[in-house]
Structures are given as C-alpha cells and as structure tokens.
Image 1 (cartoon, helix red, strand yellow):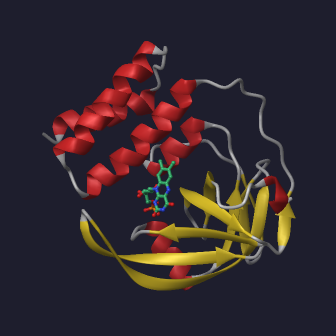
Image 2: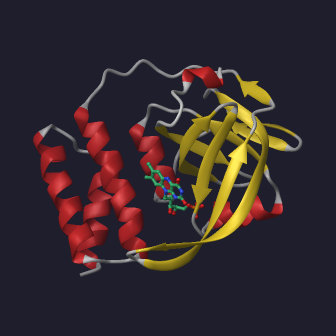
Amino acid sequence: MVDLLVENLLYEMLLVTRTNVTPVGVVRRGNSLNFKLFPGKSFRELKVDSHVAIQATNDPELLVRTALNLPVELEFEEREPYRWIKGLPGWLGEASCAEETWRDEIGETKVLKCSLKPEEEIPGRLPQRPFTRADCLLVEMAVLFTRYLVSPRKAIRDEILRLYTTYRRLGGSSESAEYIIGRLDRSQ
Ligand SMILES: Cc1cc2nc3c(=O)[nH]c(=O)nc-3n(C[C@H](O)[C@H](O)[C@H](O)COP(=O)(O)O)c2cc1C
C-alpha cells in the first residue's frame, strides 16, 4: 500500500508515538517513509522509543487540532510495542532516526531525520469528503502558525491573516481558525 503514495511528494500525515499524535510531512522514497521532526513532544518520545504509526487522514481539523494540541476525540488500538489510531489507514514500524543541526532564516535548531520501513499495514478507510479549498487554507494557516510560535515575525503573521481572509470568503468557520487568529492578536 505504500505505492499509494507518489514518490517524492509531501503528504501531511499523522505520527503516533508512545503518548502523542502530531501531524508530520511524509515523503516516500522506495519502500521508506521519510519525515523530520523539530523539537517537541514527538521528538522527545521518538528518541526513547522508535516504534511508531504513520496514518493517513483527510480531515484538516484533525491535522490542525493535533498540531495545536487542541482536544480531539480519537480511539486508539494497542499491541506492544505499537499504538495507533483506530480506523485510519497507515503503517507500523520502527523509525531509524539521526539528529542533525538545522539552519534556516529563523536560526539554528536540532532536527530528527527519520526513515520508516513499514513492517505492517494498519487497516482503515478515510471518510468520504468532497474537496474544498478552505481545508487547504486552514492547514496552511496552521503550518505557518506553528512556525510563528517559534519565531513571531510580522511577515508570517501577515501571511496567516491573508490566508484567513480567503478562508472566510470561501465559507470557512472552524473553531481552530479562530483560535489561531485569537492567539495572533494576543501575541502582538
Ligand atoms: C499540517 C502540519 C504539518 C506539520 N509537519 C511537521 C513536521 O513534519 N515536522 C515537525 O516537526 N512539525 C510539523 N508540524 C508542526 C507540529 O505539529 C508542531 O510544531 C507541534 O507543536 C509539535 O508537536 P509535539 O510537541 O506534539 O510533538 C506540522 C504542523 C502542521 C499543521
């Protein structure tokens, strides 16, 4: 089933570690699923226990709420040493990770570069959902917002507000979008 992922294309998926769920950008190269993690809870957990699940979702709210640590309703399944979200398709395996130094315009930080060769498939199916551009905008807002939390720059804030204007014009009205905008205003 890894063949479902087009090679070299970045997919936004969910990474399940010991006690945490976070969205992660995943790129398939051959049989490996590659992702990188910046410091945070998943980063810390993965360094202690590298058994993970990588799962697909087409629910933007789930990607955004897990990124922002807002409450989500998820059921989990477990079989030592693995834990995964019930019902979402994906893979289980042991990630091989290497810590590196990452430099960009924000500055210097650590990054964990990981590669997973799936050992087992997780059965599941994605709910039917028609496509809406509002979903893309919400996810993009959340990605930028997680960067803004690390480096609160005006350029990022302006870009989030620009995306939000279009999001609203398209009919978007989610609580997580309002949460992002609320936190932007308060941090000025
Ligand atoms: C769609 C989306 C994709 C993300 N992809 C990554 C990623 O690949 N690596 C990463 O370190 N953070 C990524 N983030 C940011 C993390 O979700 C965010 O920094 C989070 O606070 C770290 O989670 P944790 O502390 O629960 O591990 C992404 C956020 C969103 C909304």
